[in-house]
Length: 304
Ligand code: GLU
Image 1 (cartoon, helix red, strand yellow):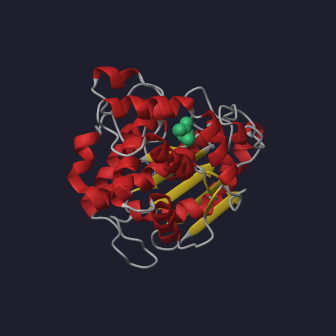
Image 2 (cartoon, protein in one colour):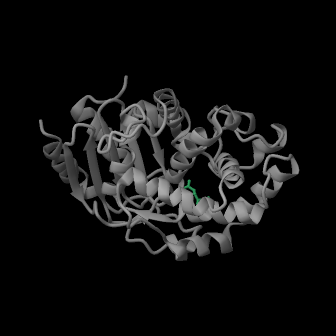
């Protein structure tokens, strides 16, 4: 069956579920998103594309940005990344501080908030203007110049981001944030506040389905080994503390964000982005998870 036909079926089957879940409201600028939105886009490395729903509407990529910054940090800092952050699932909420006390300010992995702060700190030491470099990297992957920060979302997060700031200062007390906490966190809030659509994200993530090579331009953006490793981290750490349940139901390396987006990789074949703003208890898009589960069942494209 064609990918487009499968997406059409998923759209029909999930229609009664649209609007389910709870929109993230701890970031005030995200609270007013229409929960009934739904989009799903698939890009294959051979050029096949399929879309359904609100696929061209921008949303806040939030934690999906953590994969982009990790890729950049692995390119720039190589093994040094792993002196400052671990590679184990946390089993705790994405914004939890509890393990940091016992583990000397070394976050469990780069895809939870604390780990992403450390990655952004590494980039802040490398670049004069890390915000710009992160944005340019994403524009290159998506082959699109018109990708921007949503400054209202960034401001809203900065004004309410006390937990993130606490985490940053706590890690700084262990020596694991090297730059000024407020400056690092400002970059972090901005990377989370990048606005992209399902089609942009599916395209931008194709390099992780293609051994680190952007299929459109042929450019090797990261080494194959690093691409494999990022996929491994997405599979084991990318879906908050329900990563086990997600692997059971979907079985694809994935990363979610509290904006309601989820990006999944079918290695060697596809990148998928689904967006539905209502979240389940664990912070993952409720309908988005169901859509990916259906996709894998209908196509047999899980990695197991
Ligand atoms: N900017 C969000 C925060 O730091 C990201 C959370 C997420 O998407 O998981 O709380």
